[in-house]
Length: 102
Length: 414
Image: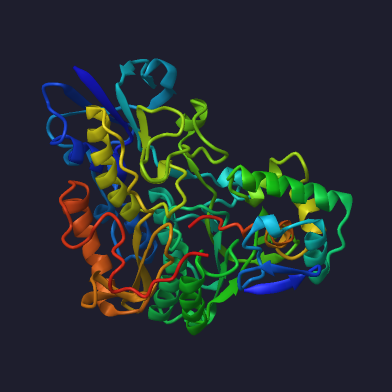
């Protein structure tokens, strides 16, 4: 489905996750963050960049991975993206929701 | 003489020995299988031990009985894999050389990964049922337990048999009802996932069943520690769930030998090509079953489907032919839902569990994603199938290695 985000037509799935990362930019991320009640800081963007990099390397994202990221610890991660940090941060980052395997 | 070495004589390793013994010419290939344990456990039976549905004897047999003639069986620990030398060191100092290596070392629980889990209350009021010892200890506890708050908890994904903790919760409901004490037991299911299961369709079916059985659900719970002094589990968002009896599925990790050999990912699972089952690092190493990092369930059914495809690929590899990229992540799991019923799920990398019939499209007799007694009897019959057909690599009629898309209402994994 289509959704207007930051004055752009963006393809998203039913949960609001971007289907095409090439449609993502910082404004889109900013706008998605706002919808989720998060105002972005430098630390937020640092985490987003880390998640995007992991995703592009096809490495699975997990809470355990965050622990070893060197970017942020889990407590801080929860503080930055309250209520489901991995789900919210990946949404803002424009990458798929982690499947946490099957 | 060339050597094919299999590490691990669990479900996957034993099946591979049975498949390959008739496929590789005996004049050219010696097959060896190594495992530290004498006993082969029927792991799906661990779910039934705590509820006195199975006895100890029903879930364990002498492993050697299932290794075919013509295969060299070594009961010994594995110290190190040295891929650069095509060699494996055993715990007794012996060195084994290989031309082809199959890693089937499985996964184990690692309760030490969570603070306070494996502490003084382990097997007092904190239990697992993923090990034989744990399941027996829990059975003894349940026999005398007088009720209170039972928390069934999953630490983190991936875990072996991701439906098992749900089944545990369902069976607990039936167990306490039969004992006439369901009103004294408060059951809560706590999971790091957003719902009862990993895929939305099945999740919906399970959420409904939990509600029907009056089992509370706490989702998105990423445990930080167990406060064993005050009997509660606490997550990173400071959410607390109190318990009187905690039944947890600890972090699952690949065997320590994988870590020692520097061959695993964060959780000691072997990076493996998901369609061919060849190791990503070494072309003469293959991995199967719970030991791999392929993105499907860690389950006996998966190992069974993988074994058929891996056997073909080993034969191709020996002949110098290209490997077939055929494994589709196919998993097929019976899910006990209590009261003598079960449901059945069938899925792969591409398709999430769907409704339909199994194994015959349009006929069944078993129904997918719907509770029925036939499914329950399927699950119970499976113990016989496991010991008599599955381990021995006898083909199971109508059940193919890749998922059959006929007779199913398919839906893609999003």
